[in-house]
Amino acid sequence: MDWKFFLYRILRAVVLVFYGALKPFKVIGRENIPDGPAVVCANHTSMADPFYMAFAVPVKYHLCLMAKKELFGFKPLGWLLRGIGTFPVDRSAAADVNAMKAALKVLRSGKKLGIFPEGTRTAEDGSVSPKGGAVRLAEKTGAPLIPMFIPRDKRFFRRNVIVVGKPVSLDGLGRLSHEALERISDELMDKIAALGHSIEVHG
Image (tube, rainbow, N blue to C red):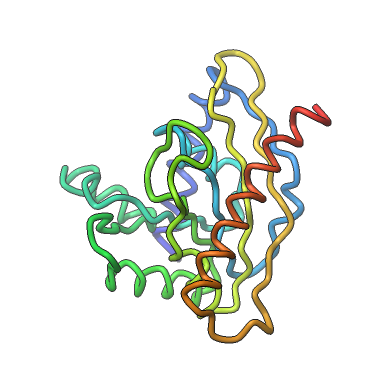
């Protein structure tokens, strides 16, 4: 038995009861999440975003999140996070080799990897340039990028809409230059922002 997946399912269910009651949500486009490995990428505006990302991804998939290393400093929380498959990343480092290795391991095991490309919570869309880690991981593994929009304001007792976009494949692009990496990362964030605008247009 995969104990990390077992613990993940239990914790997800417990937290879902709380959020489902106080800040209910609806997921549009869940069918866009394919079987097999994928890099799920979302905008990041609040501490609740990792939970909503996990709620949007079907429970049959094990979503493993990359989270800032500071969360692991409190040992009980660090143990719990590692126990469900979440792993730390040093945001102060230009490139955290250990985090990249852990992310590659997640994808090569066939699981879903959850990343916030901006690397930190943002006050408004586009205020922070995305990092290239998500795109680089997709390039190295062949896993598709899954854009996801999570609303900035999570309203109490009213439905919050999460939108999942169509997979973005990098197949056939070969080794990406630094310029291509930045361009695709920016395009990914544009796709995420567009998903948010689709809520306003289509309801």
